[in-house]
Image 1 (cartoon, rainbow, N blue to C red):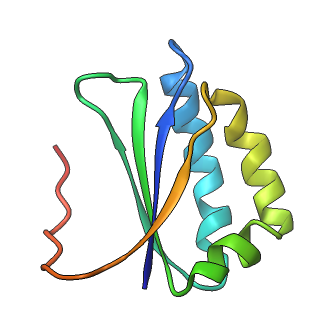
Image 2 (cartoon, rainbow, N blue to C red; image 1 turned 45 degrees about the vertical axis):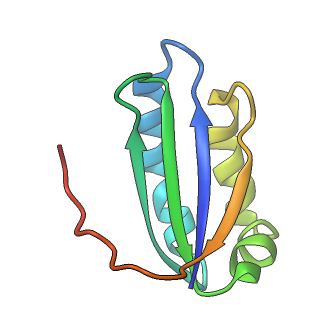
Length: 105
């Protein structure tokens, strides 16, 4: 399993619109082969910053499958206008430890 990490800087005052657009975009990525789940978290100290974590079966499921798809073009249309600067996306492989249960709040 591969973990995609993206720190998203959303233009000031556009947070609510971004979250609405993300809700519309989420089913697009979720329908991609190899997609394992995602979390989107908003930074408490800087509310315009979000952390997107996506799990993929393989690196290629993201970098080739999703990014090469028509779904990615729609994802980009919905979300990319919100970013300033454009995020850097990195990929990680689990080494050790037990993930914590998800919490809201």
